[in-house]
Image (cartoon, rainbow, N blue to C red; front, side):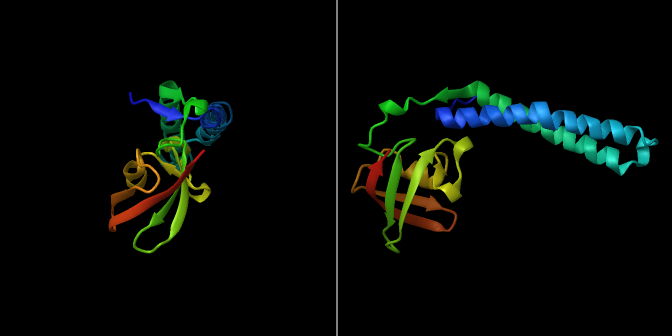
Length: 156
């Protein structure tokens, strides 16, 4: 099982999501299955089939979340320095071809949210930036080709 590094906030949200799935959504699906079963013949009951499929998907999601929670390791945010790009640092980068400037926070996969500027540590761009210092360039292979970024600023 792979270790998942995350912030205390990310861990708290993960546990909340897991509790919601187990204590609210699981009983709701069980109720739907019981109601569909009470309607008679299960061989031609689309409602029952859909509820059973939803239950399977939910149980898979619960299982994955439990695995992530079990493998989670909290990152001590006080020990993070800004000498180089690492997980939980905020990095301002410039695309050397377009001069476009972007700012991302490098986070664990489970905390990634591009709309919030949180880039998963497992993405090609984050992997290319890890360990870089201000002024250094990172050449990154992405599906559309090769991009080069210059690290402008690193902060918390």
